[in-house]
Amino acid sequence: MKANIVMLPGDGIGPEVTAEAELLMRGLAKEYELDLEVESALIGGAAMDASGEPLPAETLAACRASDAIILGAVGGPKWSDPNAEKRPEQGLLQLRKELGLYANLRPVRLHPELANVSPLKSEYLEDVDMMVVRELTGGSYFGDKQEGEDWASDSCVYSRKEIERVVLQAAAIARERCGRLTMIDKANVMATSRLWRRVTDEIMQSRFPDVQYEFMLVDAAAMFIVSNPARFDVIVTENMFGDILTDEASMLVGSMGMLPSASLGEGKLGLYEPIHGSAPDIAGQGIANPFGMLASVGMMFDYSLGLKEAAHRVELAIWNCISHGQCTPDLGGSLTTTEAGTAVRERLGEYYLSQVAYG
Ligand code: IPM
Ligand code: MG
Image (cartoon, rainbow, N blue to C red; front, side, top):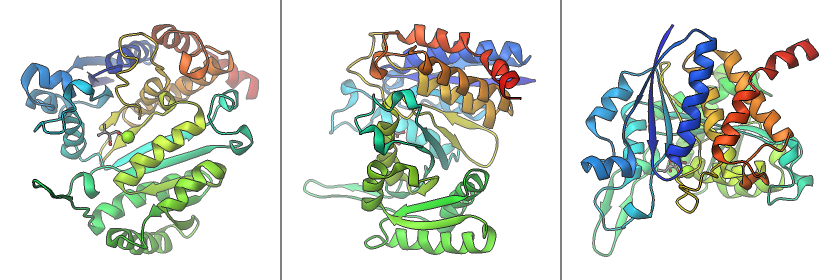
């Protein structure tokens, strides 16, 4: 089988973590006789420096023609002038929109060894294992924006269709997991949230009678994520709330560097990126945590390349690295980014041992 992968290292620690992603995917491709074609392209601040555009036309064309995209991070102080007309983040937003990647899956699972790395008390962290499905191509990120001298506006718009397709995805995921879905909104204030409730009710009652669902206001959800995170199985929410709540949720599992994500649309093409940003404070030091990036590569093998086993192997290898204290300083370890990446690759075979041990 052939697979075309586009690598978008981006800015800050992006290139450091995508270098490990490339080594991991090349190693696995060899084992699965996957004929991998890997092409690098520019996005974000790096692309602005080279061409003035955060998403150059050739990057978009390469991504459209690919089977999967790996992205590091975009943004940084160099490009954050509030008066600038263009910003690195626009490149990422435009890419998501152009490719129709409306469902952003962000799994949050705690390795027990990391309960003491989390800033939360460990007694609140038992059984943290949730999947956040964030709507990714609508809402205030993409609504009409106006900026005057003394005023500005961002409109939040959602259509029934946009809500339906992401709720369907989330409900299907809930059915495969523990069968519980929480839709998070601000229906006591926002009209869009009330539409989300109506559409979610219709879908859940007509198509998912076996999946339990509830609605929760986003302010209460922000509280429950830290006070009782184990109550969540699958969360579905609009773009902005999903952005905010997943940074919050990353603290449950020890570090921002841990969370992977997959952005999916109607086809197999997906965009895989860690949820962390470009971390300019540690960029270039070789200490960035690559696990969120590598777990995203695992998700790529599953969702875009149809190799579930490879995905399980990556997941278990990361898990075992943590069990053995092989991690970067953010998790209390002393490995560099490349050492942590190497450790994951060296543990890929452990999946087979676990299969023998547990049948
Ligand atoms: C994320 C990031 C992006 C977002 C930024 C970089 C535009 O925070 O993927 O969570 O807000 O979607
Ligand atoms: Mg974010």
